[in-house]
Amino acid sequence: MSHSQGYILLPGLRAYDEMLVMQRRINEARRQGAIPDTVIFLEHYPCLTIGAKGGRDSIMVSSELLNKQGIQVYETDRGGDVTYHGPGQIVCYPIIDLHRYACDVTTYARNLEEMLIRTLDSFGISAHRKEGFPGVWVDEKRKIAAQGISVERWVTMHGVALNVCPDMVHFGLIIPCGLKGCGAVSMADYLGHAVDTSAVLAEMIHQFSTLFEIELEEIGEDKIKELLDHAHDQTS
Image (cartoon, rainbow, N blue to C red; front, side, top):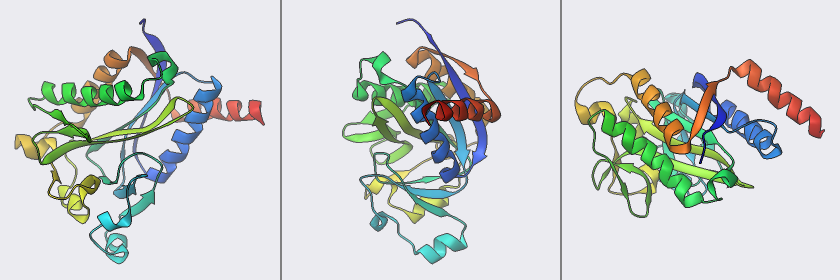
């Protein structure tokens, strides 16, 4: 397969709900063929998200305590249960057309995990898949990256989140991914020293581009919003 051209959006630290709207708009435009495959790499303000298989019973504290700590809760249509997002965690949201990849959702999900495994390996961390449990693990009980995806008319949304150096105390607010007896770990905690988030981001981008054979061109928010507005106008 030859490399295709795509966009990469790097909006920085952003609210989950704001970027969910952006994902949905990009997904719609991609399904229309108005824009190429696009991937978003970012960090979120502290929040909990509940996937399609989840429920609030995996949240271990009251809404009042979450509000006091400034942690928002969002219900979403991605796969999986409850997870935490926050600064120091790199989130990758690919919005790509799987027709180019034989409409194979399983291989797509495995490639996202492979991106994480290769990235971690480059920082001296040996990570692996765990059969039946999406995401990436450093051992049988510690998960270093979560995965939750959705596909609409063969165009993807949501994605993966890698714990580089987030506040791990916040993971104690939930049963991560609804898995009792398992916990989350960060790269920094595993290695025992600080990790450069920007270096991890650069490696993730490289691995994504390699695995999905997409040459990524950075696009600014103003430009992509202009393209999305135009695509919307064309269908109105």
